[in-house]
Image (cartoon, rainbow, N blue to C red; front, side, top):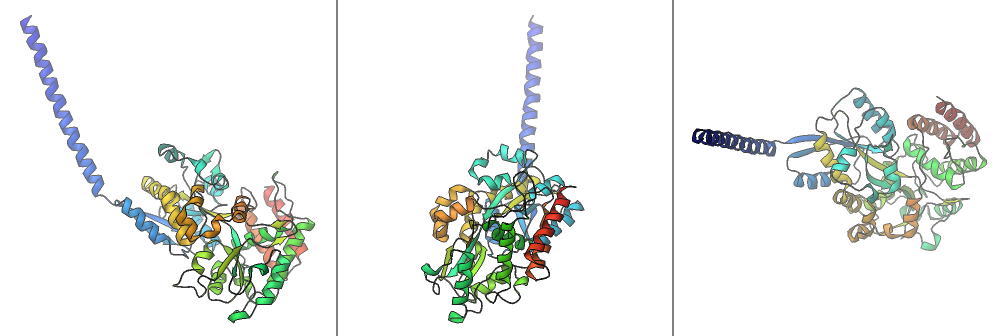
Length: 432
């Protein structure tokens, strides 16, 4: 019995020594692993279009301060969203890992998800307990495809009418497109202005947004909720005709068909026009003393109305992680920061873009920088913004619209012919 007890004690002692050794070794390994991880820096690449308000470096600096082991390289792409789209597709189709985080136009997520270019984010969202109900509903839905969340909403956008309040009394701010033509002609040339109205009319994605606004404000649409092509209507023809009339009038630059956001906003902040149609960032750069000649002289109003009211196209940008990223975990941390409260607040204050986190509409710092965010008309307009045509092959549909609207603007075909061509070609693309 004594011998048996001694044997048991010996076994216990050996076990303790073994477990102690394992525990000691494990702790050492953990410390070593932790120390090694702490000392290792990872670089990720973030790509987006031209940073016109110079807010990205500020966001990266704030992020790197919180994540000292992650360096972010900013890869700035052209302002033209078509060129951005092509750059992404070229790289991702070749399975390149040159991009980790990519900024996507609100109409691209489904296309990129279907092509396998971006990875689903659901596991990250669930792990970090992110409540997607905190975001604008439309922005969240734009990122969903086949029951999964493929991108995170970074910012929303809507087009507005910006005007020189030092030139144009509030009572003369145009309510309709007809009013705009009269007011633009009336104030053109005042206080050194060269033009009456600025917009974007180059053949690119921005032209689609402008066309959506004109056509919808007169009651037309491209594709209805049932997926039917309904562009060929008297309302759509009237809306496009109004767009053609304005782009061919004396109130816009003679080369308006070469204007994107950059050309139009540059002209406006140089004091060359009393009115401009542009996205919300326009307010921030117009009040930037380092580049604007019209600081504190800009008012904001809804876009002019057609027969059916004022309409703004739904804009915005989403954040996706490349399916070929070598650092998806680090990429997610940047996506989470950029689309989170801190990143969106910096963006809203410094660039004037609309937050997709709805709580920021009550943030005093955001409202101080963008007082028009508190305007009920603005909030209702953004909430009811009209999306561009919803289609699984949106890029092909966009190309058709760009080409035919551009032909109409350049007087190569009539507005009616452009509408008929769009109907025929869009139907053919959707039938595939």
